[in-house]
Image (cartoon, rainbow, N blue to C red; front, top):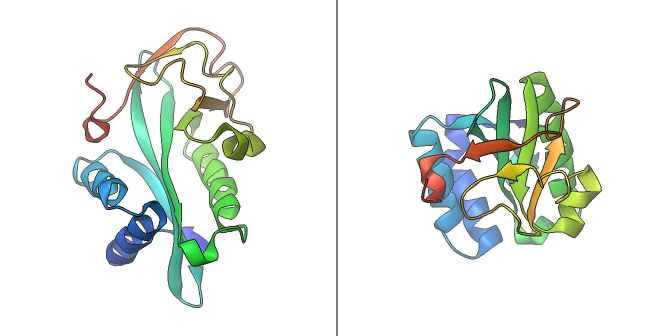
Length: 164
């Protein structure tokens, strides 16, 4: 079951993220994004009443009025990876992002994985941001027509530490 995350889930989410990445850095990133008020929304996947997966969407500052977001991180407990939990979280996340009025999304991740959902490096070609622009893993997905058809400059939240 996919649902919105609640404050009571935060400890379990941190455990899922740490287990999935094998370190606490990404869990600390999520905690900092929350503390700084940079959350657009976050979802969890539950199995047998336990959090087994998590996806986080943070806001981006763009040189346009429309809302742009960043998908990061996506985490699934190692024992549940390869069972479609991550895909369910991404698909639900894309639906939620559309409902929030998000114009487009950016992700820094495996092109083979995120490409299945429509993210492409080509779509991110017109996006400038410190450190990530031009990397093969830096990908975009337009949720509204024209979201990435013209040059766009974005700044990630401070928690990402991208030197903006």
